[in-house]
Amino acid sequence: MSASEDNDPLMVIPRHVAIIMDGNGRWAKQRGLPRLAGHSAGTDNLRKIIEECVRLGIKYLTIYAFSTENWRRPPEEVSGLMALLENMIERELRSLHDNGVQIRHLGRCDGVNERLVRRIRHAVESTRDNNRLVLNVAFNYGGRDEMVRAVQRIMCAELEPKEITEQVISEHLYTSGQPDPDLIIRTSGEYRISNFLVWQGAYSEWYFTPALWPDFDEDKLREALVFFSKRERRFGLVSEQVE
Ligand code: FPP
Image (tube, rainbow, N blue to C red):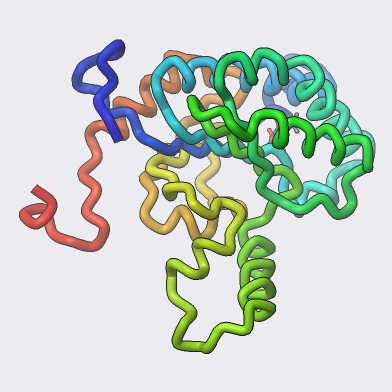
């Protein structure tokens, strides 16, 4: 973590921010629009927030784009979300690349149409050497599913039980090699983890805001960072030890 020089000198910039972008459906409903219009507005907002994170010097941003449970939504919403992701990659990849963003995919490819899988792989491959911001896109992702996958991979490595440590488990998650999130933001006034970064979020600070995702702008991100700056992170210790 660092205090960014270009920003408020008292603001601590977390190294890793994760976001549950919730409330697109309600945003659309409030305007008498179809749910997909909310997801589309959410996608536009995402672009702005990524840019702001780059500007602020955040090094890792993880976004929850589509969960393993979201397949159960109405088929037209599922296909609409797939199309939005595909369009977003097509439209934004060049500018993300030029801004030094490295795209990583957290989640499975099973069940995702082949053309979209190719686009995701291309986005990941073509930005792999960028290092200004790592953008983890949790897509077809579930925290429990990630842990099941990690256990399966550990079993394949034929480790002895005593060799299985927290570090070994972390190394078999999609986020292997990355720091755990310092701050997890959830929009739309819901207070749930929803199967997001179940392992990695063990010591994260959580910030809940009633703002619906399409309304969560740069100022609201700043409010979340101000909140984070005031937190004392103890990681199980007492205040005196942290000081
Ligand atoms: C939750 O809002 C949001 C999602 C399930 C999708 C989030 C996706 C984006 C912001 C767009 C970027 C990602 C892709 C895949 C292009 P909700 O629909 O549950 O809202 P509600 O709770 O108000 O109904």
